[in-house]
Amino acid sequence: MTYDKIPDFIETIFNVFKMVNKKADDQKDRRSKCISLMIYNYVVEKAKDNKIDLKNIQEQQPINLIPFFEYIAYNNIELYDFNNIEMNDVDTTQPNDLERFVLTHVYYITQHNK
Image 1 (tube, helix red, strand yellow):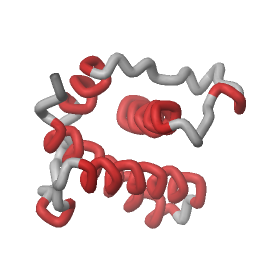
Image 2 (spheres, one colour; image 1 turned 180 degrees about the vertical axis):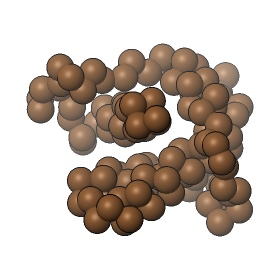
Image 3 (cartoon, one colour; image 1 turned 90 degrees about the vertical axis):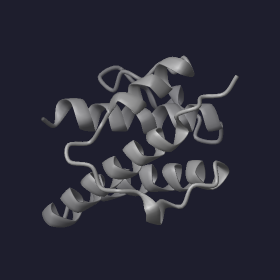
């Protein structure tokens, strides 16, 4: 059984990327720009794997985070605790670790920057 709301999930993540990227550009924040590019690379790969054209994604205001939380729950993804993370906790050569790392950033950005 596969997650059947992947287009909604991709739309959510793409909108988070656009939000972070705009904020990074506006504030000339290199760290946020790097995070936005990491999110972008992740969502481009997800879109490609699922044959979704990112050009057709509508901008959301506010961003609907329900698909994000459903995806995490459906896939049993345990987010990192950035307050207690060590460098060796993440192996970026492993797709599951990389996804977990990106989605943790999305979580922290959307929940702690309100």
